[in-house]
Length: 428
Image (cartoon, rainbow, N blue to C red; front, side):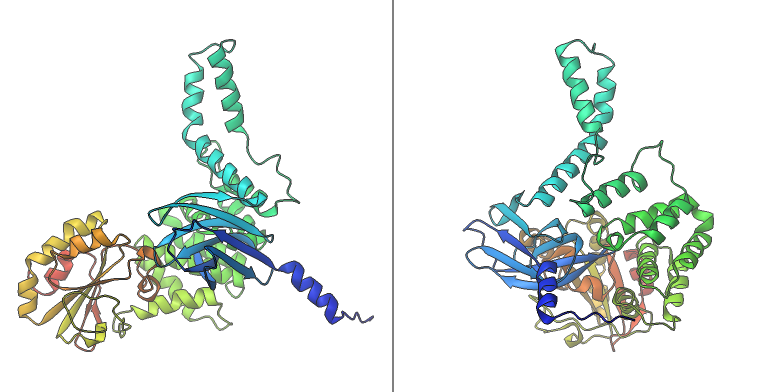
């Protein structure tokens, strides 16, 4: 067999070709200094690097090939925005107002095209049906009729004329979104078609943001009575020992968690635990989040940021016979109806040496501060919404989410609603 030698210079050239830069520009009055770049794996954001502003510009060097969705997050102001990479330089200019992103100007070609296609897709779904109905009332030879026909024709177009070689990710995303996730009732996709696509697709499936909604669509096509059979059929085809199989398994466990399908969540979480192969980071993350909040597990400690109604530095510093930990938000309608019920019984809880700890997923400081003024229990928030660190640590998918801990911070109950909390303490 003939040996092929590659010089270090040639390797360096390949390395340079694989690298691209993400450049973000912001106005001079934008106050954030730090920015974090993320890639995507299924529905999971993966941190790439953190950069500081230089003259209100952030430049991220990405060291390898990547085609897919990316995002930049500004933790100080909780601003975030999404964009794509086609393994080429990305350039974005932000327009801001009172330190909030008002508009995003995509300067590079790929993101400019993607932005226009996304805008067109929204109009296609929301406006095109209405225009088609209005058209029936106007003759084609009138000025308005001609304008209607032109606009309908424009909105009816898609990415068919897009050069796949020049823009592979945009082509991949739009083609497969329109095929598998369209709201068009005339497009019927079978489970076998979805299985074939997931099995045969290239790596852009994981980076496209299509996987989670595609799996939900797959489960819906099988009906509520065939969930286990549908999942087993899919996993048998993909093989859970493979990276894609494990990513899909991880996504399915999260989906069952979100929709309170505990029977299926437990079944496939057990399957994951019993795997004898090397576990991918994606699946390991899902398993760890779930292990953290299993009944009987030690609830991971949390270091408070700006706690209210306590001098404690962390969750474990709070000494009580029992604790009720609530993940909530001032913008959550269910929280709005449930937390006042807890407030009404707070003195009774306190008399039993039961402490309440609220960890908020708020973003707006004023809204959060106003709301907690009525809550006498321990309150804290990172003011990062669903970007809060405790979302992954405690496997939080919805608000409010409750945990009851014993004196040693072990989980002894996971109530679904405030009524279950009060019933557990015989206060209902």
